[in-house]
Image 1 (cartoon, helix red, strand yellow):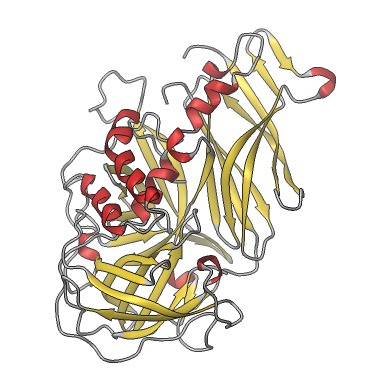
Image 2 (cartoon, helix red, strand yellow):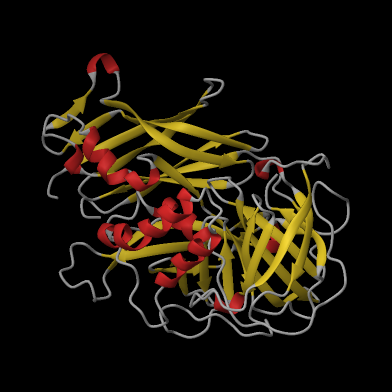
Length: 470
């Protein structure tokens, strides 16, 4: 699930000033937010180095996710009305996230530099505690996870929590039952208790029916030879001051849109290997890929993260979502320009039609981020016979009710030219009642007007948008 490792100095120098401007303005300074995308590399640039990103991923992409970028487009205004949505009517597009739980996936990534040793951490119990009710959510890990601390491994543990909307957990309990030392036996806690039972400040948000990831870096530099756990080293590798010093989650289930038939042109693969024919969104992150299984690139404010993907599969009645794998240079290889790569993280994606039904000729869809604040990614999708012929993406700001959106062909390389503008009004909750709380909004009315760019002639100038949440 999508985590990789940015160069810390580059992050601090290039993104932090923009993030500071954005946060200092309490999310209102969208122009400053847009500028952050200008750090994206042009096609043919090298991928972002992956060496310490885990702690900054969600933060860096929370910046990217509120950045509305793009250029191009054209045409005269449309005059029809868009379809309906959840919370405000029974017709038009409908979000269907089922009745299942929210899932948090803990991704344990081992390997320093991801030093020398043979220590294996054993994980057999994972918990989260609701800060409001003190209810403990837990899973017994069976089989237990053996994490080779000086190896470059990735292992996942899912914790499913039945919720109706969203829950924010402000603590991350880390429990390690024991350390196995090859040739020396086990390092254990006293009286059968876990060797490590620590708690760290966190910002872990779950949404009903969706998947959030928490990347947990563990390596042998965090443990003394007697098994003593160095919490400061763990924090230094899993948090950063820019995020408030918390262990953070990020949404990890992408929606895929096939844009191979878009009339206004295609975005470029940031590697320089041609055009992207698919785009992906979670609310936190953006990505692009080819149509055939192959290159998959997650876009960042300072470059891109390289990877590959494969399509969904079906075996009898069982279907499996599409899977992507992000990679990084192998730290054991002295030449980072060679083809040696190791897995950074993996995740899933689904075609938008799998969870958004009755899309019709036009759909306006917004996606909340892991911050669940006043900013949401917004997508405008024009279809003909189920084929996407035009698509814009951008930003809703519920604080001032504004929309800024851009043609999809400028998602890569990023640009803020030819913006179309608009507003959102008549915000409704899941029961169809008026609300001003961004996290409660399930639908509303959008209106589009010319900005620096022109609203496509095929787009309605007003209609209903829906929010991608239960």
